[in-house]
Amino acid sequence: MFCDELKIKVNAGNGGNGCISFRREKFVAMGGPNGGDGGNGGNITIKTNPNLNTLSHLAHKKMYKAQSGQHGMGKNMYGKKGESLEIEVPVGTIIFNTDKSKIIADLSKEGEEVVIAKGGRGGMGNAHFVSSIRQAPRFAEDGEPGEEKEIVMELKLVADIGIIGLPSAGKSTLISVISNARPKIAEYHFTTLVPNLGVVDMSKFGGSPNDSFVVADIPGLIEGASEGKGLGHQFLKHIARTKILIHVVDGSLENADINYKTINKELKEFDKTLAKKTQIVVINKIDLLDKEALAAKKKELRKAYKKGEIFEISGVTHEGLKLLMFEISKKLAEFKKNLRENPPKETVEMPVLRPHLEKCPFVLEKIKKTKKQKTFKISGPKINRIAIMTDINNPEGLERMYIHMEKLGIRKLIEKKGATFGDFIEINGKKIPYRK
Image (tube, rainbow, N blue to C red; front, side):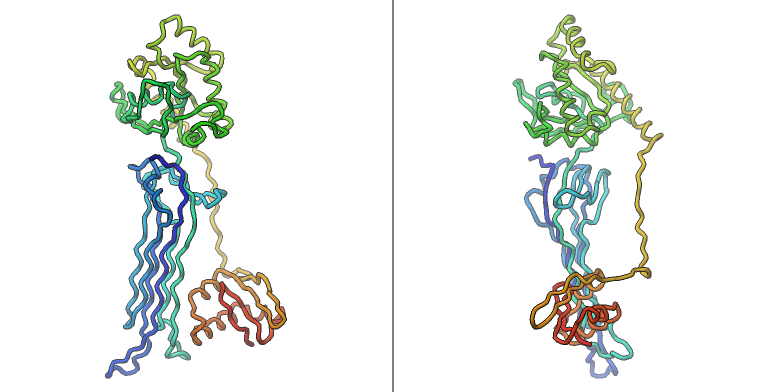
C-alpha cells in the first residue's frame, strides 16, 4: 500500500520522580537525605531512511510513545533514563502541525533527523534541597511530563527527474526500461495507482556511472487533476522536488498539442512554480507511426511547444532512448552547475536570548470571581514547570511554591489586583491558597 500522508500522535517519555529518602545506618552519624534524581524521559526522533519510499509502515499505528524515566531511589541512586523512540521515514518527508499551517521540519536529506517531541526532565531527589536552613528536606520534585503533540507527515518524493503525461502515455514503460524500477505495465488503457521511483545507471547507455540519477513517474494526471479529479491531485505534490520534467506525449493519440497543454495547465493551477520547471518533451510510441505520421505529429505538437527539441522514442523497441538519456544527463548537469553558482538565499533567524532583560516571566491571564473568593490564573514557562514538578500536597513542596512566587513577583502583583485571605492562585491547573 502506498501512503504519502499520515497523521499520528507522538508522546515523549515522562521524567521519573525524585526520591525522598534518608540514611539510617546504625553507625553513620548525621546520615541526612540521600534521595536520588529521577531519570529523564526518552525523546521521539524522526529520521530519514533512504530504503523507504512510502509512509505505509507507520499507518497501522496512531500513537507513538517513548519510554518514561525511572524514579529516583535511596542511597543517591539516580533513575534510569527512558529509551528514546526513533521513527524512520522516507527522504522527502515534511512534518506539519495538525492543521498544516506550520512546517515543523523538512527532511530532504539522507540520515537527517529531528527531535519531534522532547522527553520530560527527571525530578530532583531531596538530597538536592539541603541547605543551611533546610537540613532535612522531606520533599522532592515530580518528573516533568514529556511533550505530546499531533503531527501530519507528508511525503514528497525526492527525485532528480519526474516523468509526466496523460494516462497510458507510456510513463511506466519508459521508467522500466531506463531504470531499475519495475512498475505494472499492461496492454490496456489504465493508470498507475502509485508513483514509481528508480535509479538510472548511465553506464548502460554508454555514459559515466557517476552521472546516474533518480527518476520518478507521476501517475494519474488528467484534466481537472489540480481540482481533485482522478488520482492526479494526490501525486502532483511529488513533482515539487524534481529538478527536470520529462513530458511524455502519446504519439498514438490525436491532438498532441492539446494533450501537452492539458498537463501544463494542471501543473500551473496546482502550483505556478511547477509549470516553470525545465521540461524535455518526448513523443512516445513512434513504433506505431510511419515517417509521415511522425512528422505530422511533431508539427502538431510544435503549436504548443516552441522552446526546444522534441525527442522521439519508443519505450517498447528502445529507439531514441540513448539520445534522450544523454540530453537528460546534460540538462541535469547544467541545473546542478547553476545551483552551485547561484545557491538559493536562506534567511535563518537566530534567536536572541536575553534572560536578564526579561521584563515579566509570567502573565496574569484572568481573574475568576465568585461571591466568596477570587482565583488568579497565572502562567509562564518557568512557574508552569515548577508547578508541574512540585507536589503541593506536601507542606514543604507547597512552601517551595510560595518561595518561587515571591521571587518572581507573583504575590506582589495579585495583591495590587486585590487579593485577600481565602483567594486562590491557579498555576497549570493547580490551585494554591493565597497567603501574605
